[in-house]
Length: 105
Image 1 (cartoon, rainbow, N blue to C red):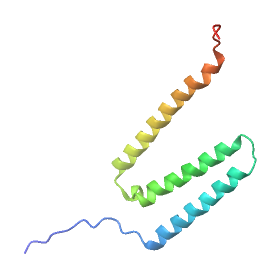
Image 2: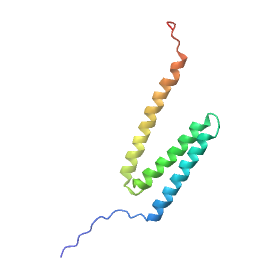
Image 3: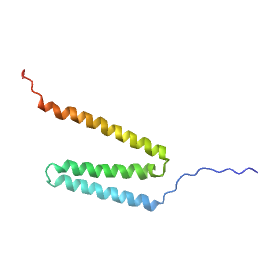
Image 4: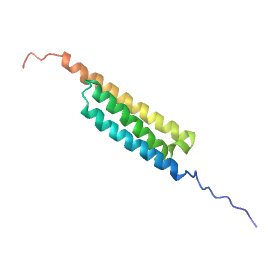
């Protein structure tokens, strides 16, 4: 008789999913409250920080990245690096356009 081992994967307790869901809901309410508060130019910054934390929680727990192999984690980190690089270079071009003057207009 030959023994076979099947890969079951990582089993996460339901309590963890409920906890993460509650944190996401609390952060959504916080985002709404911050959007209604007038904190000047920091409204966008705070909203983006909260959205980044929420996206990180979703990717780590609901998409099981936390329990994935190191190569998968490295791939996601590299993709995020290149995304931020692309957005950063795009913003440098966009932000410098206001400095140019066009004498025809």
